Length: 327
Ligand code: NDP
Image 1: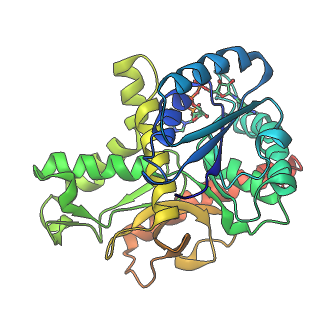
Image 2: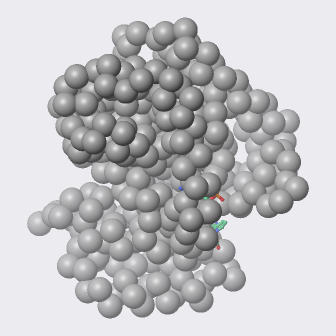
């Protein structure tokens, strides 16, 4: 049997955590043969609630759950961790400007980056879920100079999965028939869900839906899906966010299926004209625990405009956190 790996989750007593932890512990993320030790970080006032979650985790008697560590100190919670899912973040409150939001999150992600740098496994794989996820990932990365910048990623997988499900619904085909959708850019309303390479049953998706629907309905439905769920459910899309986090980490760790790609927010290497260093959604394949950007895709003028707009937003967020001295 394999020896356990250590998986940190921050904001572990929150809504996403409540869905995420049970799936990690049951083997959905790293495989049904991989024992895990959960390292759960919360802010001090949430430790009591976290203890309740720990009681439930224990009561599931998951065979793969080898141990649980809890703390309100990232230097303790991140000790030797192989995976870190950074979920806890400061939500945007009414009247908050982008600078306020980025500043508040800097207070969380700067010390977390420093702690990962100091005590995590040298191969730690980091996924930032807490919003604004791309720029929070940039802050953590820039405060972890001893780790490879490529170890820091942001989640656009929920957008990717939403893009699949919307196309499946429109075409009346199962989600399993859909391949090679890309979410470019920021996990925000400027994201670009791109169908130009997508296929349904092996045939080009854009030959099966009309262009007007794609440009004027589909893209905004995917981008605004979170708000639609809050409106319907009265609270945010925590279970699907957790499921997407599982998908992101599983594919990164265990690999993507042959001939298919997924979308991950990763540091740009300049591919497709995206400014280097931005944490930007790209099409990637994974194998051996590494991701590679899918190269050589044709970019139409329509795509170029969308890809540049979301890059522009991320550049502005980077400028803002530079001004705040966070990166
Ligand atoms: P959730 O668990 O619902 O959400 C956590 C973060 O995930 C938010 O930033 C949220 O962004 C983001 N997110 C990303 N995608 C989605 C999505 N599709 N749907 C919903 N959220 C998404 O928040 P809770 O308030 O329930 O829990 C947060 C927990 O984090 C609390 O227990 C708090 O104590 C903790 N926390 C811990 C910190 C730490 O460990 N140091 C620091 C800060 C908070 P958005 O706000 O945009 O929805």
